[in-house]
Image (cartoon, rainbow, N blue to C red; front, side, top):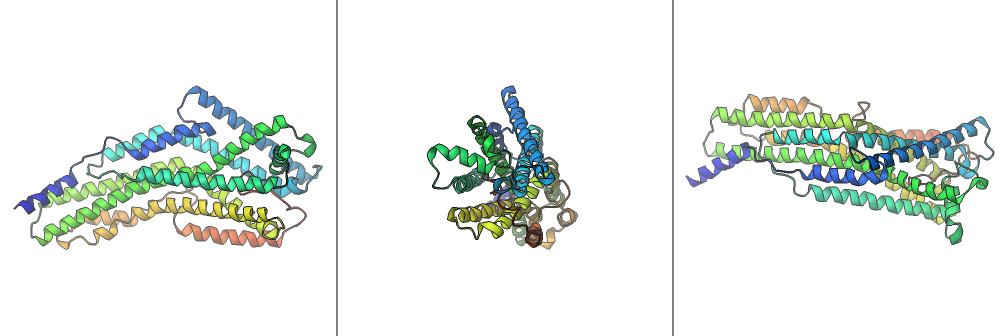
Length: 427
C-alpha cells in the first residue's frame, strides 16, 4: 500500500507546478549584457553608457568610411601605394572586418535592448508550463566555462597576431609604430603616421576584436539556454513514461481523464517552448546571419593567404599565426553552428521516450504530441535565409573548398601580398 501511495505522490509531483523563483540563465545573461556595455553593446542602461556606445559606433563608422575610400582608390588606380599592407586584398579585408564589427555592434545592441521583453516572455513561458520541471543546476557553470574558453582562445590568437606583425627584432620604442602601420596600413601611409592617432586606434581596434568575437559567444550562450530547457522537458517526459510503465506493469491504471490532462500539459509545454525558440530566432537571426557570413569570408581569406603565402613563408611566427588563426575561426564557427543545431536536435529528442510508453496508455494526446514533434520544424535560422542544423557544416565546407579553388585559379600574386591583422584571422 505504501508503494502505491509513493507512486501516486510521484505522479502528482510531476503534474503539479513547482516553479523556481529565479532563472540562472536569465540572471547570467543579464550580467553579461551589463559587462558588454564596456564594448559599446548598450541595452536599457544609463545615459552615460548610451553616449559611450554611440561615440564608439561613430568612430567605427569613421574608420569604415576611410577603409571603403581606400578600396575605391585602389580599384580606381588613384592610390599611391598598393603593395603589402596597402594592397587591394588588405584594404578589402580591413573593410570587411570593420563593416562586420559595425554591424555586430548595431545588431548586438538591438538584441540587448530587446532583452528585457524577451526575458519577460521567457519567464512567462516557464511559469505557464504547469509542470514540475526542476532547474538546471549546472547551466550557469557551463555558460561561464564556454565564455571563458572563447575569451582565452581569442586572447591567445590576438597575441600571436600582434607578435607576428611586430616580430622579435623590433626595438621597444618602435613597437607601436610597426604594429599600427602593419595592422592598419590599409588606412594610411607611413608618412601619415602619428602617435596621437595610433594610441586611440589601438584601443578601438582591440574593442573591435572583442566585438567580433562576442557575437559568436552570444549565439552560443543563447543556444545553451534554449537547449537546456529542451533537455529538461525531455528528461521530464522520460521520467513520466517510466512511471507510466511501472503503473501499467502493476495493473494500476490511472483515470483516463488524468492521463489525458497530463499528456495535454506536456504537449502544450512543447508548443510554448517552440514559440519561445521562434521568438528568440526573430531577435537573434540577424546576428546568426552576420557571424555566418563573416566567418565564411575570413575562413576563405585565411586559407587563401595561408596557401599563397603563410604556409610557405620563411618566418616561423607567421606560419604559426596562420595555423592558429585559421584553427580558431573554424573551431569558433563550428561551435556556434553545433550549439544552434542542438536546439533542433533536442526539439525532437522526446520521441525516443514516447515510443517506449506502454500501449495501454496510448491516447489522442500522445498521438498529437508525436505528430507535433515529427512535423513541427523548430530551428534557429539566419533571418530565414538558411536554417542552422548539423548539415550546414558540410554545406559550408563544400562552399569553402569551391571558393578556394576559384581564388587560387585566378590568383594574382602581385596583388595579394598581405592583409591586416587585428586578432581577427587577418594578416
